[in-house]
Image 1: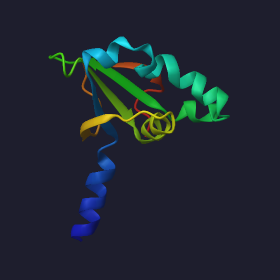
Image 2: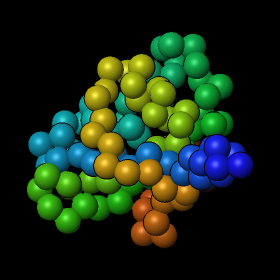
Image 3: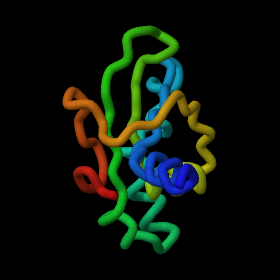
Image 4: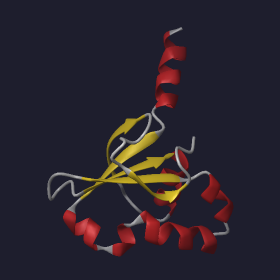
Length: 108
């Protein structure tokens, strides 16, 4: 039973929270909204667009300038793109203050 509860809890955390510093934010190649579409097209994975969900929110410090909320498909693609995201947490849904910047809303 404990294993089932743990598995359900992990599944409930649909979004990985990734932090980007001010230096990372200044490089447009670190913006999923700018780079992910071109990557999907070039790699023949454009059908994944219907399953990707990326939200963004403002951070509060220079080290945490932007917070990205990526679902599992977006995290996989981001990794394939050679990105090494700094994951600081996971949660069921992005906060209400976060804006959809790429993909579809609350994709699961």
